[in-house]
Image 1 (spheres, rainbow, N blue to C red):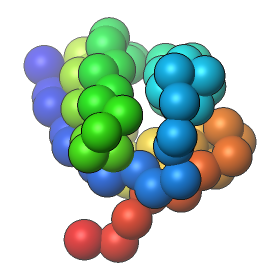
Image 2: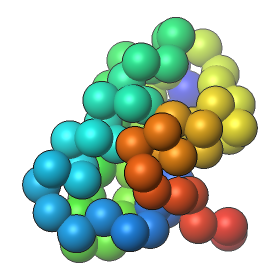
Image 3: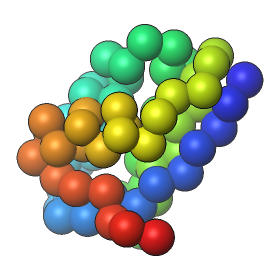
Image 4: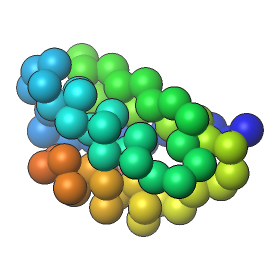
Length: 69
């Protein structure tokens, strides 16, 4: 199992959290997505490594963006 952590900016409510979880959850291999609204922290667990680009694209689809670290 692989775990990756991201910071997503622009989320302001529970709907935002749901949208991000839904889009990231569509990525093949993703087994769980945990989003902390207060910090913007998103922890993604997957059965195989996923690319940062895949996650950034999914977050963009939800209407938000991954902060550069």
